[in-house]
Length: 80
Image (cartoon, rainbow, N blue to C red; front, top):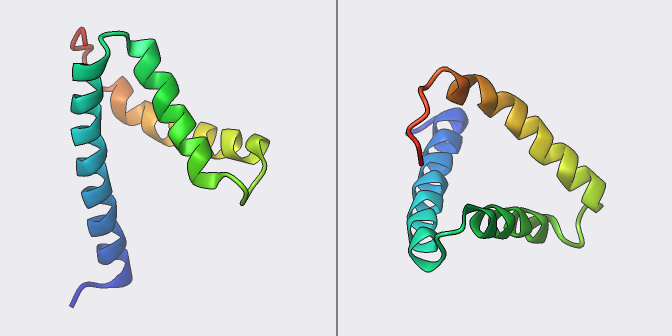
């Protein structure tokens, strides 16, 4: 049986896989990255709508970005 931490990671990986599938569909829908970026940000705000204020959602996003930047900074740009 998985520990709570293992289960959380498993759940995250399932959500990440689904998000990447959605991203592929979005790329087929619009070639403009700004359209996709804004749509994904709107989805995050909608996830929290009516639960926490918009400023809190922005702080959550900024916190996640601070964690992700070191991971992606170490990778060479792919030109996508």
